[in-house]
Length: 235
Image (cartoon, rainbow, N blue to C red; front, side):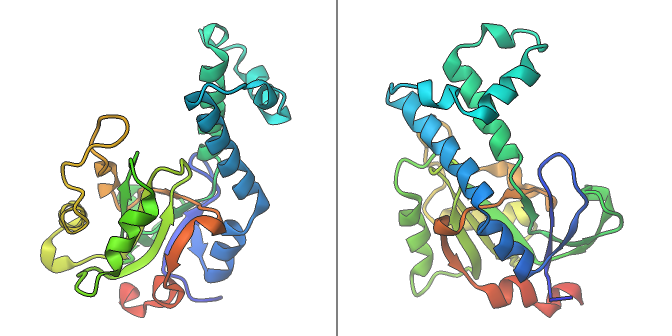
């Protein structure tokens, strides 16, 4: 088997946690199905925000199938077309392949905190609902004196967020401590996003936190050698 450093599962809700090799990673980020789900999510969001026609989306076969499955749920029928479409696109996001960058191996096949066998030495950082192009924030990591080793950087599926995968600096403390320090170095502490809430997502402090697969076009940077092959993470 190829070298690997972290794990993945089929989607957010089911699938065994398996090694994510470079071949597996690249197969997923290049998958046309992944790209279509992300593009649909962004297109629906844009149409709703700009008050455009939603007719073309309501005719999508997958949307009609989604509505059929939801018919028995309380209050679904009372939702507006826009609300139904947002539920649908959220389900598309949830069905994307998921990477678990913080864990190299679990005791079993399930993504449970109590079953972590080996940490990878990587941690994930999210900045959500940015009011600027996410690439502008990513470019701050290119400064000559930037103190973090970034292994992967990409735009999130919403199109308005940035995800970084970095080396965990143990001298700074736990994952939460690392995220706080990284946010400060990115000048994002206290910054509010388009929703009026802080852009820094503090829900990533769990090493088992999932990261939805990006499409290839949304990857700003990848250090494939270190992302997958750092043997020290398994020592």
